[in-house]
Image (cartoon, rainbow, N blue to C red; front, side, top):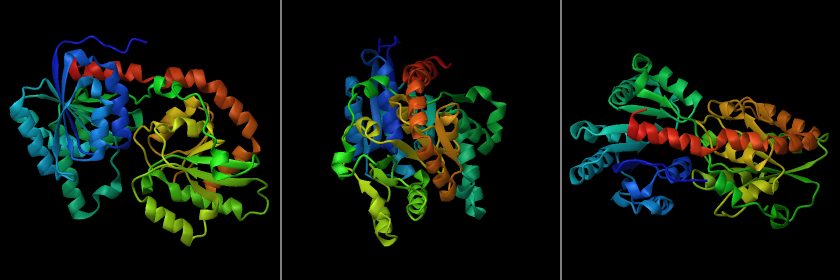
Length: 384
């Protein structure tokens, strides 16, 4: 596959407040399809190990990295962006996430630089409660109006943006939906399966449920654990269930302590990190995604391309990805309903596994990031 897209010489300023998880993966996947020989890249990001990894992910650009403190305020990040634009005349600013987008507004306006902001999350009502919340909502709406292009990473996220800031409907050119995708080459590099059963020392009769999200409320880990706990206490459940968790960040220590306090740790095993999650996906029976909300998650796309059945939720963002796929879906934040879907999987595991395998070619065509990358390039440099 030709990974180079033609372009004129560009100077690109990348602004990232949280260089972790989906944002870093998005950049790694999509920027692969730009032409490093024709782009001079500068990154403004916190002084973190994750920023080092981001620079490695984009090493083909030989990026210049401007570091803030490890936990910059919006004001500090904004000052860093402004200083960077004084040192170089940039063609475009590409910010990632709401905080980075708002922080880049002063520099983009003062220096008259086109500013594209990719939003990697959705707006929720619980973020804007009370008087302070209402003022915060107004301030964010004001800031969004001053960004040239607002890029939503999925259809659900695009609808959510317009619901949050209805005034944007009057300027359709200001908002752009380009769906997330994954790098198929990264999947194909790992055709082998991790021997998960040997690592956790369980027999072939144990059903392995993979959880590969960050340990934070949004990812719904506790709802999955409660669902499995409910089934473990049910004498009619004939299969032994084991959650295989691979993840980091968030509140992993707090979750592990909660598991011990609730005596749920007996059916959860934590595996050490590996460079790619793909072999671990191949080594479990089903992948659980009990999210409370998402923008456009990459994990289910990867799972479907790998050919694994999914038990997910109908939350914003995730339901869009799971539509029309061989996946079982429950309402978010409903452990009992999720338990029912686990039972449905147990009763139909062979047919669901076969269906997931048959869906792989369709998943590869649907989630190939090269299509999104070409649209992103046009959005950044051609104003399309």
